Length: 199
Ligand SMILES: Nc1ncnc2c1ncn2[C@@H]1O[C@H](COP(=O)(O)OP(=O)(O)O)[C@@H](O)[C@H]1O
Ligand SMILES: [Mg+2]
Image (cartoon, rainbow, N blue to C red; front, side):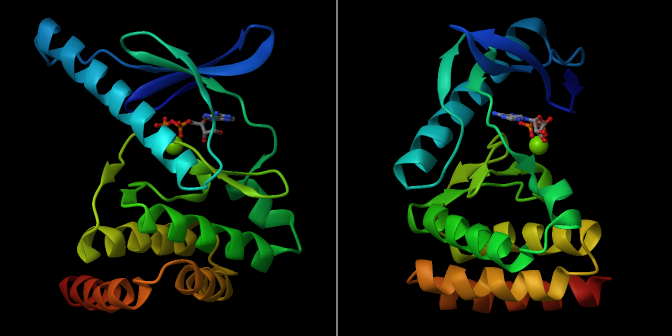
C-alpha cells in the first residue's frame, strides 16, 4: 500500500515484526532545499508531539514507534476507517457518540485536531484519531468551533443521509465531556451564520 496525500506519503512496513505505517513528509520543489528540510522536520516533530498529548488526554491514537527527520513510524491501527464504517454499520449513533467524546477530550486538553474528517478516524470497538498534521495547541473558542465546523462539513459531504442524527449524537457527548462546550457551541453558531451569508 502506498497513499500519496498533499503533504505526506504513507507506506506500510513492519517495525520489530509489528505492522506499521511510515508517514513521510514530501519534498516540495518550490522551497529552498535547506528550508524545505527544516519545515518537514518541524511538522514531523509537531505531529509527534500532538499524538503524545492526545494519548495523554485519553484519546486513542497510534503510537509513534520511532522517527527520523522527516518521517514517523506509526503503529498500524487495526479496524475500519469511519468513512467506510458509517456506510455499513447500524450503530451510527454509538460511533458518533464516541467521536463526540474524543473531540471533547482533545478540546479539554487544549488540542485542536485540525482535520476532523471520517478519513482520519479508525473504529475498532472504539474510536481512534489519526493524522494530526494540521493540528495545533489552542484553547480559543474560535479554534475549537472551527474544529467542530470542519467535522460537521465532512459529515454533510460524506454521510449526508445520516449527517443530522450523527451531529446530534456528537454534540450531546461533546457537551458531557467538555465543561466549556457551551462557549464553543455559541461560537460555532456564529461561524455557521457567517459562512451561510458569505455563501
Ligand atoms: N496509524 C495508522 N493506522 C492505520 N491506518 C492509517 C494510519 N495512519 C494512516 N492510515 C491510513 O492512511 C490514510 C492517510 O493517512 P493520514 O495520516 O490521514 O495522511 P494524509 O495527511 O495524507 O491525510 C488514512 O486515511 C488511513 O486510511
Ligand atoms: Mg488524513
